[in-house]
Image (tube, rainbow, N blue to C red; front, side):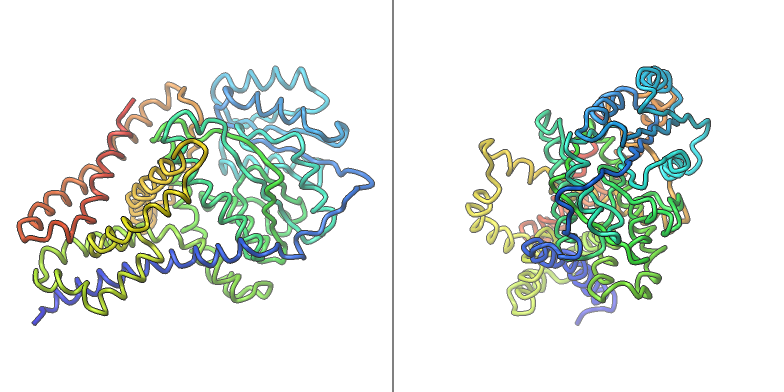
Length: 498
């Protein structure tokens, strides 16, 4: 007979595993969407515009002088009528970036205007609201300081906006210029592409709610004004505005032909800081927009479901951490005989089959050896699917992306606890270059140590308990519980590495 505690641990373990796997099942829905032709309502375009509209390029910047000049030069070189293009830079910098921008403005007074803010009220949302006050265009191309548009970006995108008055924004495709520098850069790019390219493209083709990525895209002024403008009460003001606009009846479109290039974060700490914001913001938006989205008269049930799931996705990370915790407790407290034979029963095999096909990572936390055998059998097929011209580079990036997903278990759990404690979080710019201000060095050093310890402590605890599990004769059964802990130690090393 099982005690009440043992039953609760077993149920918690299985329920969290199944819940996380439901997020994985959505990948099949997205794959189905990606195979469909785009929704006709959002793919109309004007082939030969009689007149090109005035476009304002808006670039918020903060201490990014090493990259913003390249972006400005690429904007000036765009294939678009010069008299129909203006550039507004809202600068919150406290370093030499301000002087660099003033000099650039002096050389290009007809096209570039720099607005320097003494404070950072509203952070990026505040900067974009400030840019709107000085913008003459009806269409805004929004760029980050390091995001350089292709020469044809505007001429690729604007014909769609001219053909459809309810198309509120277009999200372009983001590509990267430094993915070959290291395995980490390639892995971060692949992890980002899952959401920025595959998910965005699938949602767009399926006619679902689309989240603006905050840059590399065009927003219609009237859509921004109708939605209430940029707001800074979440750390992903881009998702916030795009959801508010679409709940008002506007539509979004992902356009692969409209391309921008940027850097992936140059260090693992920079990536972790970025992921913190990307995981915190959607949860804040879920709390803000969950009920309004369900009540919206402009959205279908499937749009509401997919919209909620996209905002809720970061919750799969703390749920995975909870599953891992229940798994360790189960291997410590449940009968050894039960754990050895349960996964060979019809019920156990059904759960393993469900988790392996929907979210394979979770299946390894349940019973390591059965999913491992399946993976071994499928490995030649998987290798061929991921192989690229770089002699297996695709597989290396894929393994790196899995490593990053595993590390986000810590980041996502920390984010959820922080939000539950009422901490909104601070908008921190994504570090694009290794150079930082002296005033930032101490803060980053402290952040580096905090993030490393957040990984070392649970790793040490799990691995210590795993030695007890080994003593119970469950080493192979429970090996999947030790894998995340080992990866977190590697993550801590990458964070502490200069």
